Image: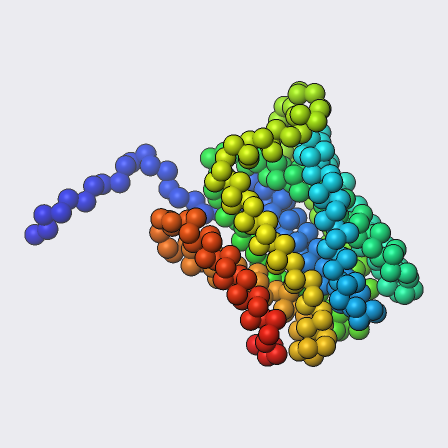
Length: 321
């Protein structure tokens, strides 16, 4: 006879519903739309890198892609956040997605006609502008389509959709470049996907949120910066992550490896671009099974160091697998 008393479950305790967030129409539209958007944008990134390096054989041409896309994000980060606070976020996201789609269609024309490289960079700069406004508005919009009690479920499904699309998008882009013998078709498909996403987001009926009434000023735009400065833990984590992302930008050179070093073509490039997302999914599964980290700061330093070591080994390797 067991002496261990097992408490009976509370009669009114709510049962865990893994599909709770998906029971809301707007969240289904949002998560499916974000999935298609990431697939389209990842395909776009693979195609741009492939075409630029195929035309120029110059690694600098690949480095300039990241530069022209990040400059508008840096310049517009603060005003874009203010617009997300003061305007209907749904329409900000719709406009941004439509802008990226139009730039993708512009790349189709430049690819077919072998148009000038400065025009390609100008369209990439336009994509960077659109992303600068899309990111803060989309992040805030996500909280308006599900009740607060289901945020955890929504975060799980959103993360899963993002990781899956980050794997599928590059691989699909690489395969389609190889099948269609060029990037133009991939640009067109990505543009169509992004237009579909814009339409899906236009159908959203998010919960109304009172816009910020604080007048726009340089001081108000720096409020977030002041908050981070007084939070050493957040400042340290953001700074470390920033340097990791900067170093991680060497993935822009993957077309050089795919074409000249590993000789695996466009399909291989797609898998090279998808591999980091595969690793992220596996790491997420491991983290889900492990207990919370006791020394998160130390682990963060170790994994960033491991990131750098893996980058060095990759640069020296001549084996595709």
